[in-house]
Image (cartoon, rainbow, N blue to C red; front, side):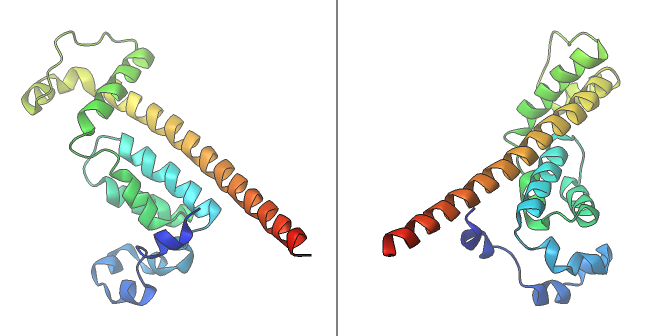
Length: 173
């Protein structure tokens, strides 16, 4: 894991305490473990960030922070991963979520789907249930997959580094 690279972007705890805006979230937000890169905190951040990225709602970043604190996940990574759904990717992700939701809810997909805010607001009473069922399902599945993949890949990286270190010690002898 490129910890050294990510450390450049993680804010200093003293800077955090001087930021008055963060005080709304309580004193737990300043806990060092929430800003530290560890295998479990990063894996939890992947789950939380990807889950909230899949949910069509405003203030996804705030939801990610509010979940990261009690679950002891890395806050910066949780917030950054929410941006998987940005204005360019949002229509594709949410349409995919809608299609997944129609499989679970059993409703038929609308034949004449239009990618416009007016059309979506006009059809919201018909598409909201499949959209949110699909979003929650997709968020849970992809988030859980990312959580497990992060744990496994991190562990494989550590084992590889141990073996390299052990090999280097044997060569030096």
